[in-house]
Every structure is written in C-alpha cells, then in structure tokens.
Amino acid sequence: MVTQPNDWSGLSWLGPSIDARALFRPELEALLGLLRGLGPAEWARVAVPGWTVHDVTAHVLGDCAARLGHRDPGPFAPGETLEAFIHRANQEWVERHRDTEPAALVDALERAGAELADRFAAADPDAPSLGVSWAGADPAPLWLDCAREFTEYWTHRQQIRHAVGLDTDPEPRALSVVLDTFMRALPHTLRDTEAPGGTQVEVTVTGPGGGSWTVTAVTAVTAVAGEAGLAGGWSLGVDGPEGRPACAVQLDAETAWRLCTRGIEPAAALARARVEGERRLAEAVCRIVSIVY
Image 1 (cartoon, rainbow, N blue to C red):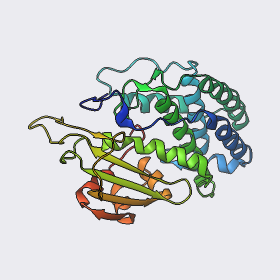
Image 2: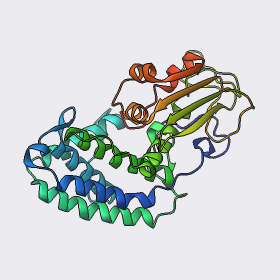
Image 3: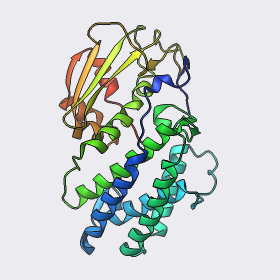
Image 4: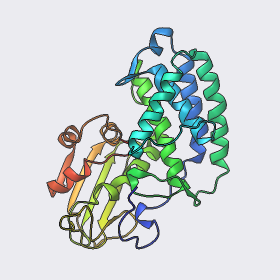
C-alpha cells in the first residue's frame, strides 16, 4: 500500500478522528431485524452483481469472522495484488456458505457481530491497526480502520435493503459517520492532481447526515516526470488561506455514498453535482473510491 507523500505531521492529513465504536451494536440489530423479516424468495434476490442477498449476508459474516481471527483466507497467490486476494478470498467464503440455511447464517452473524462490537468498544482508537488502502494509510490508526469496517457493514445492509425494495436507511447518525469516513479518501484520491500549495477543494454533502470537507494542497503538488509520484500532498488536517476554494463540489447524500462505493460511476455523479470553480478538480473528486475496488 502507498502512504501519503511528505508525511508532515504523522497522519494528521487524514483529518480529525472518528469514533464509530458505539455504532456497531445498533447497526448489527438493524441488519438482524432486516434479515429476520425476509421471505425465501427475497434471500435469492440479487443484491450486487454476482451475489444474492444470501451471498452478501454470508460475506458480512465472513468479514466478522476474519476480524475476530476465526477465518484464515490462506496465503497470497504468486503475484496476487491485495485487491485480487481480498476478492478471491471473499468469493471462496461465499461459495462455501451457499448451502447454509438463512436462519443459521443469521444466528452465526448475531454471535460474531456481538463479539466484534465488544472488541471494538474496548479497543484503543489511536493504536496502529490494519491499513486502509483507499485512504493511503498503512498502518492506519484503529479509529480509521474501525470506521472503515463500520461503513462496510452499513453499505452491505443498504444493498440488501435495495434488493428487497427498500430505500437507503435515512437514519442520520450512522449516515453521518459513513460519509465522514468515506471522505477521508479525498487526500489519497487527489494525490495525482496538480495544484499550487494552498489550493483548496471543498466537498459538501447535503441533507441530514451530510457535512462539508475541505482538502488542501499543503505544498505544490506536481507530477514527478516519468514516475507515479508527487512532490507534495493534500490534507484534511490543515487550514488553508482564507477565501473561496478553487473548487466547490456539492452532492446529495445518496449520490455521495453510492459514488464512494462504486454504486454509480464518476461521470454520473459529476452530472448530478453542483460545481463551482475548476472543473478538473471536481472531476478528480468524483474519482473517489472508499472501498477496496
């Protein structure tokens, strides 16, 4: 994984910490309640390309099991990237559980989810933890790793909701944490975007649970000739010069979270966005990815 260039103050460029630990229990209860209300035909509906509701539920169980150390995905294959390894391991887990009865899946998820919630509740948010590749931090502080994990469970629950004809859960506290976490990908997203030092890009998500994030070019950001690299970096943790940002991008919450999880393409999000200022910076913002993709 690639860390943010010019690590000028630890991981301060990620912005202020997020504490998602108390949200795991309510999220688990919401998911269990949803799953227990499904009929047999709903378990077979497609939730994401290639996976049914049953498959996504098995995947969530697998995520919990992996975090608890109850699942060994095995070694990397020769030449396998992190992304390819994760996708392969997830697919193998899902395929192994395709014959598991839904009730058994839900019961196992209840046990594993509760254990994981307790483990996160007792953890030190500032301790080093697993890397978050889409934020460019390896190792990442546990607060970011934990928040990332929460966004995955929340996102999978929305995918199941959509598969069975329900809208995105509008509960603002969870949505606020999800969006705040997703936006921590902005410095890494803009890492190859040239800009003078002090250039600011503001991203605003409207509606309950929304917010505003400003990412600043801390030093002049210029592409290194012939190489994938930078002579500067972007930060969510510094104050830039006063005045209007070079670019302001406004998105509604539904567009924002779907964009970050590749539920819609960057061009579609850009078409829905309200943009003021340099369009090339808005185009860069809309390349944000806040999942392993």
